[in-house]
Image (cartoon, rainbow, N blue to C red):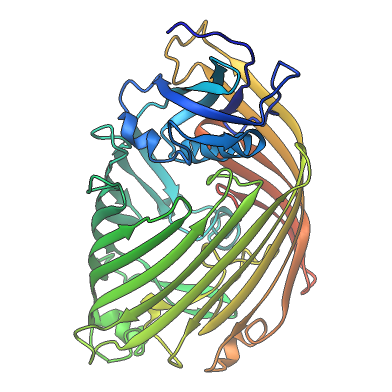
Length: 472
């Protein structure tokens, strides 16, 4: 590929390492035409998957400044496929206003066996404090995942789990099933067994029950099929049709007769969910720029309506402001509504259940039929390292360890409306809740997230909290 490089510009995106776009030549054209697009480094991934994310085409003239903005946005979209550890887009000038585009990617390791060793509780603080660091409340097993089965971003996951919750889970998704790459399908099957389960809340804490013989007291099976339509780059439509069936022992109903509301020890329903998502985040694992809007409505009880007939509406709206390379501010609003006054306990929502929390209240659950949470974080990136260990590990998927550290200042507030006004939970339900504090976020290999925070709430309580995911 013989190319005359009169001017060269480079955009690089590796583990969200921000770089500025600056052509090496001081002379730039008013417009450019793309002659060819070359992709290198995609040993497994099909070229069409990458081309699907591009907002430009060949044999077409673009305003130069507009073209630079397109390249930066496209580079982020390719990275957010989560197929590559780095993405680099380079326009190479072959004439005064003609370029060839070189896209260089570094693929991730797609087949990942993982040992499952995770807490069964809502968060680490719940396990550490409320459950007294009880190691019987740990799930362990093996998870196998292939995140690029046929090179078209298909994902296959299987998990076998023992411990506090015995579970089998099988998932398969194919983002595009048509030539134009707009329609996709996904399917999931899940089976779970429990010997101990939460059966209600009291004094804003979960109450767990397990019988003396340590028998299995709950079994559940769920199956779902999801259709995806992606007409534009940032807008998605999802339609999910699923079935859920849950059985509990008579002992559970003795402890909580309203566990399923119907008085029966079996709950079955077919549900349908429509979701619209607008996702323009720069990094889906830990965003510092862009926005996310997610709106869904679920009808529980398409059939078996005598067991459940309910509607749920959920809204998530997040905005990420990039002030500079080192500073950014994130704000996000979540709201959830059930139309009925009460629900089976398996559908109970509230603050304290992932992802809805107010920092400082991680040890509590505040249950109800309506919830509103507004989260805010101001962050400063004070460490940004790329550690080269290629002399120890020759595999390019693992020979660079990224480490980014952010210092955060946080403020959250929210409200849960409990129409039933349960006296035991009145301290926090139907009350304004507020939490604030500071923390350190660690972003590591393959965008993994660890958060260490100290938070205070408006009930006068303060504590250290440890989490494994981004707050929003």
